[in-house]
Image (cartoon, rainbow, N blue to C red):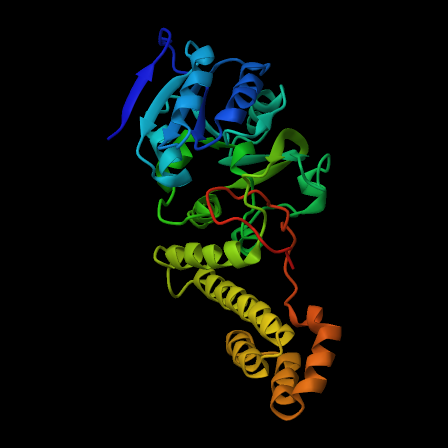
Length: 349
């Protein structure tokens, strides 16, 4: 059951931008997030905060009291990030939609720069600004885009292997475009935004990057760091879901199937390395065989042969060149802090 209240008087003229902020267990941070919205140099916007069944609702609503004249507040049962954003979309009145996570921050010119970019590119459907990491991380102070460059023009094929493509907190999307694409998928635990960007591009939408930082991406103890054992399976789920809307005879379907195979191979390779480190040669051989079945390669073929005939030597050899077993993949590995999933317990590959 969804309940809501709207504080303050509603404007007769629809806002230019609807800022949608899903809130889940971030009561300690959302005040700073809202302050960054209220500090925008462009002011014709509305703010919709969606409490997605948050376990810290008491703390959250205590913080929101200070902002009750500036926000529309909606409370619902937990449906995940996709479900919270969809609720925001259904209640939005703006020409543009912004999706700001409740622990991230915009710089004061975020909206002004985004809208200027749209004015200069009138055929654009979605724009993504850059961001700087902050919090307890070695990436603090570093800008995302120079670390993870994606060249223009942005295409389905370029976004596909990134397992991300854009931080939802720093995008601006035409509401008209969103209504054509549809709503965020609510079934994935993660990567509902990745799935959405791919849907938009597949359906003829256009996407571009602003090459300057317009916000700050928070990394904190409650964040989910980029653990491929968590994110890659979720990417596979998102891509399998995407297959349901693709023309099976089209080029995109072939690209998606190839990416699924690559991701499955990547997971099997990591499991094989883990089994090898434990001295389980048979387990390693089974995992490498799965990786080879997904994406055949000469090095994997040699590894499988060596594990059958010379397991100890092969274990030593793989420890020297196992990095080269992994397929080359585009960066965007620092699309960190994916929320609402298992905690990362191992370093990324």
